[in-house]
Image 1 (cartoon, rainbow, N blue to C red):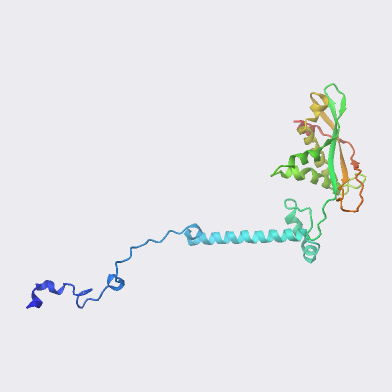
Image 2 (image 1 turned 60 degrees about the vertical axis):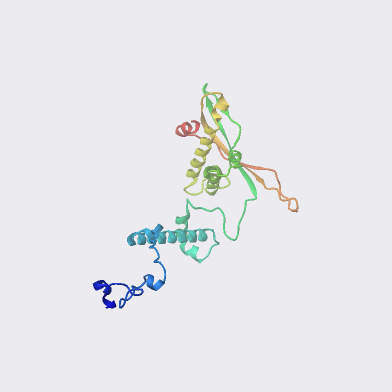
Length: 263
């Protein structure tokens, strides 16, 4: 009779962990012997992993293209500064097309040739004053002005560092020792250098300094002052420190350039 004291409830009363004849649920407290662990949600993905498959493929392709472009650029730069070799003889034009003019390097790998001279570019002008007369200015040392602008400047501009120097190198490469043009770019180098010095004279207010008022630049003359860098004190090398000058002929300044140079 004791087995039926609970009536019909006796069949559902637990007897042990899960009652008689009832298996315990997998992973429940009966198996672990303790309370169930709380549910921890997974953290959301971040960065590229959060993108869909299509966008992740796009990012991977973009990175691959950038990596290839960087490798090609580094390779072209290496070939440009490297000594002449089989690759540059075969594909020199392709290398030059990639490098010039934005990535030009003024040095060579394995055989650096540092400058051993100080070269200053100077200019003077003939200015027509308001009374019809002509006044010749003194020499303006444009390289010294650039040097003062660069000295102590943590972020000097490309113009301050290279514009005047590269214009002078361009002129020397297209003219002989008698200042006669060699090749088709001779007149281009002259006009390029002339425009730079006229603009610099306008920036220095050369017209007002020479005439005390209004005027116009009629002609300009450019010259270079070259002096050897003195050797160190411990060296026995003897070099001349006397500067050498190279004067170019007077160049007439077109009226359009005169207006741009004196503003």
